[in-house]
Image (cartoon, rainbow, N blue to C red; front, side, top):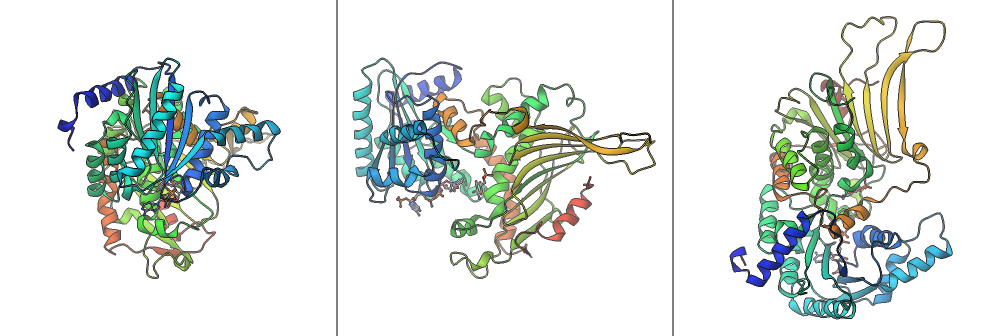
Length: 507
Ligand code: NDP
Ligand code: BG6
């Protein structure tokens, strides 16, 4: 169905959605139905339901307005689903009676429905249940809001979206909306992503589609724009005249355990670099938006993505950890990279000549995600007694969020010598007692509020696939080989050599 086929009623509904997303801070009241599709799966139990629970505990999902539906094919009962997710709701430090009460009350808000993803029966039943819930709660004034979280493999997105559109749209004449959250990987390359975007775009308008990238919900990723544009310190420094190279790094100290089958179809570039690390790169490199309005921010992200030059073959190192193929769900001769270092270069006035080194790997020596901005050497160095270290500005996204600056100071004492030291803003010390929200929690709340600032727009997604598709096709065609590396290592030695060639100096 094309957009030309929408009825007047559907059009006016879509218009009210667009308006809702444009009006800031308009408190919405009324019934909210949250539907987790793929409720039996891994993401749902580990991330989606726990995020909903945290929102519930903080009062963002009042029980007199909210009902949560789990939907999947598995024939399980309400209690089976509740039992499955319960242990992910309480933290490892043990739980207070109050928290256990909250868990139990939250679980009572959840109802499970079983049905297929491509036939109307299940979705009609879902619609009936949502409508019943709405009529029981709409006695108070307010709109009815329907949020569908697709915690599902992307292969079923088109059929599920069609079913939602056909059977489950919000029907309240008091206003409200229908929104969908879709997960990554959104496509496998430019062509498949565009095809998927077109299929979903024929059913839903852009303001209704929330393409989630959970890195955009991380505290220090969200801090990036504030750091860059609210501090005089950084404004004159943030360019090719001062910055030598930038690294955006993701490491995990475990392999693809339990997800080998999924991972092997995608690899580390599609799993981490094309989405999470590229989103971080946008925030590090984009120009200042006119305002914080979602469209202004996303316009700037698209501009910088479109300025990325084609990736050079000699600026790529791929790796695969030894033992990866022992997973029975991974083919014996798989060449899928579990590690990659890729240099991106941006052709604009601010960044020409600066290498942006994106590095991601599984089964490495540590779990860490960070941004390292390394400045150029100080010209006319007069402290010849000791090799001057370079200034570095580091933003550690996880674990233990921190922002620190490596700089050279005088070694305390009688001698005039220099030493590298740090100005350190470690969040645990500075913000004691402050709980940093989980990324998913924040992003689901944004969806309920209609704020798309931290979600990926269609043209942004297209631009990101344009960057990586030629390289991905070469890898898929076997033109690029993954170099074996030992689990628990730093990855292939060739990646460190590339880093050195790009100009990075260990400080
Ligand atoms: P799962 O493999 O656990 O699938 C979720 C549910 O979808 C399953 O419980 C199953 O439910 C149904 N399902 C599985 N395979 C198929 C299939 N081939 N056809 C139709 N239905 C199927 O996925 P995850 O929960 O791990 O991930 C869901 C989405 O989130 C994916 O797009 C994934 O890439 C993304 N994601 C996952 C993360 C994670 O940590 N797990 C992290 C970031 C993104 P049933 O059979 O009961 O219908
Ligand atoms: C997911 C990837 O998107 O992000 C996983 O599919 C990865 O492979 C995960 O483990 C990492 O997320 P985080 O928040 O733990 O860094």
